[in-house]
Structures are given as structure tokens and as C-alpha cells.
Image (tube, rainbow over all chains, first blue to last red; front, side):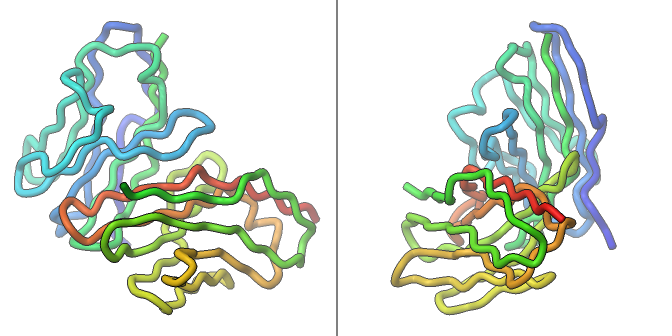
Length: 111
Length: 113
């Protein structure tokens, strides 16, 4: 069964550094999402992407964040200058239209 | 705005006990409702869903019925197993726009043998 994959599984970085989190959505899906989950808290929507552009973003998704679909398969989340409070689990999801399928997540630790 | 409220956790039960995890929602429009499960160290997995009023979603012995009159989508299972220990998230999405998911705060369930 096809699944969403994410790399790396764990990323440790220094405050102020740039990080890129990678996702490979399910191949025939059209909508792509990033969510994050700070430890012990609820899962929060960051951004959705459709037809090669952002369709919606949350207040969390400020100028430090960007998303890109550089080729036909990858979907990336870039954090330009990481802050301590960016430490969280980041989940990618995709859907053809309707039910979203999640990847296993990338745990980002900012020191 | 749209929001989901789940019962406070953690919940601890003995094996074979009956489980209910309450979930209520507030939404503009007509949402689809979901339960996702997160096993220790893993990502989110869809457990079940319902897309319109009075629909019942079911999977792996879990059930939830979309109740529009009470704006609820409570998760139930008749006899839980140790392997059901996980965090359960209720969520909604509204058909318009990006269909983002709005999650409840999650309920940690522990089943003791």
C-alpha cells in the first residue's frame, strides 16, 4: 500500500540555522499539508499546498517558513532561521481529495 | 471558527473494559469527522471517519457516530486490548477551501493487562 514518507526521522540543529524537512507524498495525490505537534500538545495545521502554490496557511507559518515542490515527487518545508520554539514533530500529509494520509513525522530539535 | 474538544486524559482501563472517548465540535458548514490514532513513537494513522450526519465510522472494533444534533463524534470500543494503548485524536475538516484538519488535544489511553 502506498504511503507518505518523510526524511530525516530526527533532525538536530542549532538555533538560527536553516533546516529543510522532506516529504514524498503518495504519487497520485493533489493536496499536500504540513502540520506540527509540539511535545504533549495538539497537532496544529501549518500550511496546505495545491497546484504548485500555497492554498492556506496558519498564523504559525510566518516568513521564516516556506514550502516547495521542487520536482514531481518531493514536498519540502524550510525553516530559514530556527528558534527554540520550533522544536516539534513535523508531519506531512497528502490527499487526493478528502481523507489525509500522514507520514511518520520528523522530530526537529533546536538547541 | 472551527474547533474540536476532546475529553481530558489520560484514560487508564483494564483489558476487556468498555471505552468511550468523548469528542464535540464546533464548525461552520458541514464538516467531515475523523479519529486518528498515534501509537508510541509513530505518526498519525486514520482510525475511522464519517462524512455526514448519522454516518457511523468503524474500524478494528472501534466505532463513532456523527451526531449533528449534539455536535459529537464519540469514540467507543466494546472490549479494549493492551495493543489499543495510544493517543487518540478527534479531528474535523470542512469541505470548502484547503480542507485542513483541525485536531482536538488528544487523549492518551493506557490499557493494563
